[in-house]
Amino acid sequence: MCRDPDRCPTHPGELLREDVIPATGKPKAEIARMLGVSRQHLHDLLGERTRVSPEVAVRLAKLFGNAPLFWIRIQSAYDAWHAAREVDVSAVPTLSAAPGNSTPRTVFRSSSVEEASAGRTSMATETDIRREIIEACLELNATGLNQGTSGNISVRHEERMLITPSATPYSEMTPEMIASMDLSGDMTWSWDGPLAPSSEWRIHWLLLKTRSDMTAVVHAHPPYCTALAILRRSIPACHYMVAAFGGTSVRCAGYHTFGSAELAELAIGALEDRTACLLANHGMIAGGCGLAQAMWRAVELEAIARQYHLALQAGDPVILGDREMEETLARFAGYGVAGT
Ligand SMILES: [Zn+2]
Image (cartoon, rainbow, N blue to C red):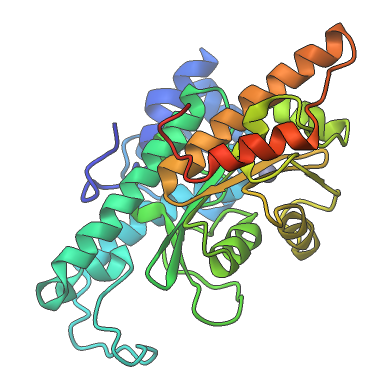
């Protein structure tokens, strides 16, 4: 279930108090000692009476084996939520409003004093999409497709891309944390929202910008897709369901550093005339007309990858011929989420 979008984001102290520290089995005094902070400071942090400073974020990250930005972003989401409600910006002008753009797109704006004069229907639609993205993220976890915080999801909404933030656990994600990026102009590293978009935002952006058949994109590192990608194997027509991805194979894009523009170009190339691909030594991408279709394709691709992997263990898979696949592709015209 997703959270109420108006609910305050979690204070890092709550996360430490309820989940992180109990999981260590260590007393708070020992945690404070290992962090190198006073017991009083930790006490105040757990009581949500003080903020996580950059210095404490670095200490927390070292102790709990994650990134300082993780703690800073949680604190920032919490701070931004409060600031948006407490600071009166009614006298502050907006300089960059596009002509005719009277509909607030970001949660900060939609939850501010501007809400009274805004298009509520459009806002509700965007909030619904933000919720659907989080529900889909939780589904990635439930289906075993996601590993850690590696999966990310985007949806096109009007001339914007709504995309999951970087390195944020899905269970902690709230609708206002979803980043919003402009799709109307050139690709730029700028977004609305309290957290930076997923590191693979370029792949999402290019697909949602250029592919009219995709309004949603799912990227993840599911085990079987990734195993084949490590072998640098495309998935051939080992099963007729390969046609669900638009052709006689699902290609494996070449390798480049995660998050790079070069990787985005490789992915776009591998997705030509296809709705899914593997990424060498990395994972997979699936797109769809709507989030439900993109998710369905992601789940289906992992199923086929698993079947192909199992077949490879047992012998030499028989690959369907072009004529057989052409017949299947013809049948797949209009094939959607409903299944066979
Ligand atoms: Zn990835």
